Image (cartoon, rainbow, N blue to C red; front, side, top):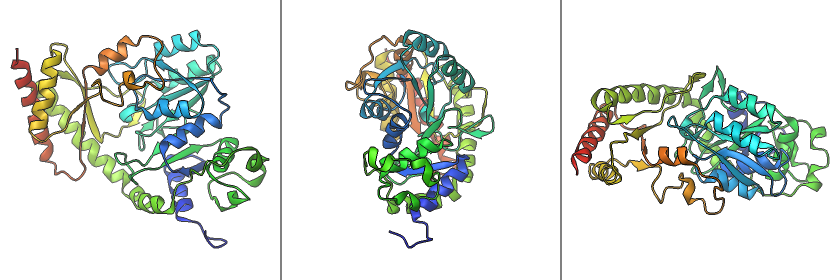
Length: 368
């Protein structure tokens, strides 16, 4: 409820987000999960239609596919924690009726998007991007989310912008933007209240033919997000500087005990607000468990992506199970670790983090 000629806090935030990512249209939503679901709905996914996506991602991605009425088909992820392009080609060939590919940039790690786009084009599949973890990440000088026809970003608690929960659907396609605004709640001409949607003619008869899911972002959430955008670039630079130093320390002290995923050539600005690494194959399951416990005992939470309770482990997606074996992803997840890099820590705290990780690795390895 704003006066004529005024922009709501949500609209102001949509303008800022679109300006940052370089997209023409932006619709703010109550969650990134809603944005992912609407990516599929607005690009023509039919009930039961197949959607190819990463086997390594957060459970919200297959949940959104299920929410949109689709059926997930999973592509292997490699030791750099990104989609395996060769397996994508195999899955597209084996599923010629699949017309949607939803690539998830898990933990801000971006696969070979040129190769993925070429594969989608060859197989006449629509490419969509889950940028929940890649706000600020650039692919060949452009913000992630431009290789696909549309993308979604997140403002959930652990993301680069944090409103507790929230998301944005971004696109240059006016039809997708118009549909999204209506699904979000633009009934009875409320599209005129939006600042980053196309003009009225693009809305066609959508206000009476599409349902209203009432998933628009609240002004309260937007008011929390808007000022964070002003500090986004300085925070990215601080994260990346600390990450580079932490990686150097770990590789010097324990390079034979772990490997750190490498950014795909083409990533011109990464965003490293957390660190992931793969434990060497010399570690037994018991030793890996001991490593995690040692870290925890020192006050450093480290998670194993392949843990039986981890929502990023595809074996836990009983609502959208994998029908084909995924041995590459399963092996990677069984050794892939995840550790947050809190922004409010001091620089010297990351020296302590490196020491805790290295000492925990060494203690675990000594266990028979």
